[in-house]
Image 1 (cartoon, rainbow, N blue to C red):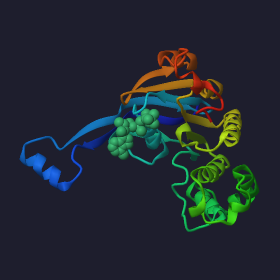
Image 2: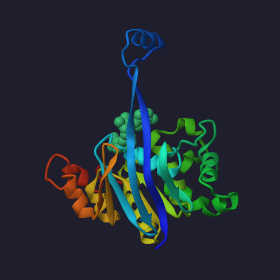
Image 3: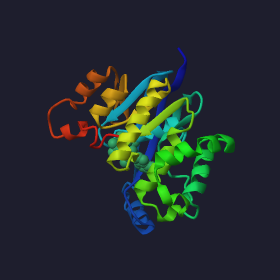
Length: 256
Ligand SMILES: Nc1ncnc2c1ncn2[C@@H]1O[C@H](COP(=O)(O)OP(=O)(O)OP(=O)(O)O)[C@@H](O)[C@H]1O
C-alpha cells in the first residue's frame, strides 16, 4: 500500500494579539500586562493516508481543520513535526487566490492551471472541459474583477477538478457556488474518488462525508480526537443526533 500523506507529530502555533494598536501594546507592556498569547491550532497530530483512501476531516469550528489542510497542501509549514505528501495535489483550497483581477476569465484559467502545475499543452487539451464545467458563458472574456464570488469559485473549482492530481483536497466551506453548481461539484468529486485518487475532504455535513469517504478524522482543539470508521466518527461528534444540525445532511444544503 502506497502512503500518500504522512503527518508525524505536526504542530502549528499561532499568535493571538490582545492589542489593536502600537500605542495599546506599548501601554500594556509598560503596565506589565500580557500583549499576546500563542496557541497550537494543530497540536502534535499524527496519521497516514494510503492511496485511494477518501478521508473526511471533521470537527467543530476552530478545531484546526483548515490549518491542517493548509499544512497538507503546503500553504503552511508545521513549526515542528513533519508533513509529507506524494505526487501532485489539487483541489478546492483557497481557490481563486492566484486570480489576477485585471485579467479575463480565460487568462486567469491559464494562470490558475499553471499555478496548479499544468503545462500550457495540458491546459489547451482540457480547456473546453474546464470552460464547460465553469459555465461562465459570455463572461469568459470579461475581467475577473467584475465576477461575483460565486463565479470566481466556479472558475477556480473547474480548473482544480480537471487537474490530474494524485491527492485531491477540498474544503466545503470554499464551495460558494449555487445549488446546481454544488450538485455538479459533488458528482465530480464522486468521480474523482471512484477513479482511485486519494481524497482529503473537510466537511461539517455528515451526508456528504457518508457518501464520499471511507474514513473520518476528527479534530478537537487542535488534536486528533478520532481516526476511524465514518459512522463511528459521525456518532463520536454527535452529528447523527436529530438535532438542529439535521439540515446539514441535505445534499443541497451546506454540502457540496
Ligand atoms: N493565520 C492565523 N493566525 C492566527 N490564528 C489563526 C490563523 N488561522 C487560524 N487561526 C486560529 O486557529 C484556530 C483553528 O482555525 P481553523 O481555521 O484551522 O479551524 P477550523 O476547524 O477549520 O474551523 P471552521 O470549522 O470554523 O472552518 C482558530 O482558533 C483560528 O482562529
